Amino acid sequence: MFILLKHKPINSKIRETEWIKIERAHVFDVISADNVTDLQPALVFGRSSARAGETLELKCRIETKVKAGPQMHLYLCKDGALLQMERLRNAVDHTFILRNISDLDSGNYSCVFSFHKLRPKSLNTTGLNSIHISVYVGLDDFHPADIFINSSSGTFKVGESITIKCAIFQQISSNDQLYTYLCKNGVGVQMGPIGKKGDYDFIIKNVSELDSGSYSCVYSSKKSPASNVSASGQKIIYVQVTGKIWSGMITETQRSVREGEDLTLTCRITVTLTCAELYVYLCLNGIGKQVMSVSCSINSTSTTFLLSKVKHEHSGNYSCVYSTHNYSLSEVRKAGENTVFIQVQGKNLLIIDTIAKP
Image (tube, rainbow, N blue to C red):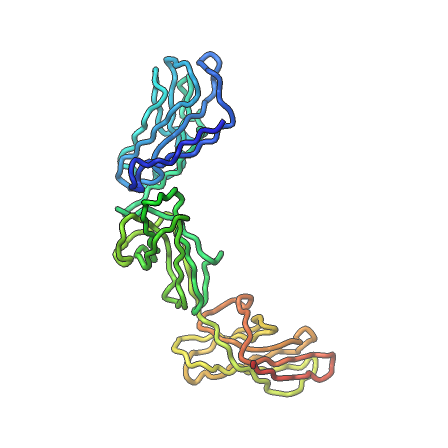
């Protein structure tokens, strides 16, 4: 049997009660204290979010047909543990009141009942349904929204674009106009309308290291300038924008070398940068193989790499790149402005060809 309680807010305000869809596998027969000793599930109704300091009301109701007994008790549970208890007598529902709530009251709430008064440690269960309630601090007219980003690591390079999705998980009627705000370090940076799908994509183009920070989403029925919003959502993601990788010019210092000998390759820096330190990477087949740290000054225009006692596995296409960020070698996956092809064949001479990008 299925019971569907339609989402029907008291009015259009987004803080009002959100009703829950309940799925029941079966309906209990009429039960009494004589044939029931275990906890029985009940329904819970209430808001899914509230502000710290408010009073929160949660209604528990017994859906199963019962014969009321003098010891029938209704329990409000948080995260499966007893929070409050009420002796029902002849009633089948009760409204529990939580006053002056804080962020510690966030959690999953459900209801159960029993014909016998149970000790708190006896309760470790959930009801027919549960409501996850988020208690937020300092948002006033703003509510927390979920946040997603187009990177599992949250790391981007200078010049790339970041796509951040803000989403709310509630039904939106045709009359609702909601706005979501992308916040960085607790301050709004962008605002956008929430569509019927309940989300909005923010795109930050051509990012710089200044875009690094903690991002979260909130939403409201009020439209305000993003810069006036001072809030943080419940879920926060950290974005790190690392230095851009520039392409360098590579040259060989000698035209011939045999297996077991040393090979030197020089990387020429082609962009003048203002920085304290520069990291120059020698790449083999587009992947970092060696890195050298040099002082970032106008006099640092080239860096020389030494490959000692070259072997057959040193064969491949060499190029060089550089950055103000110290990447691990495995993170460097880019070829320079030109490549030098080196093939090592036993004690034979290396064949060196310089190939420039078209």
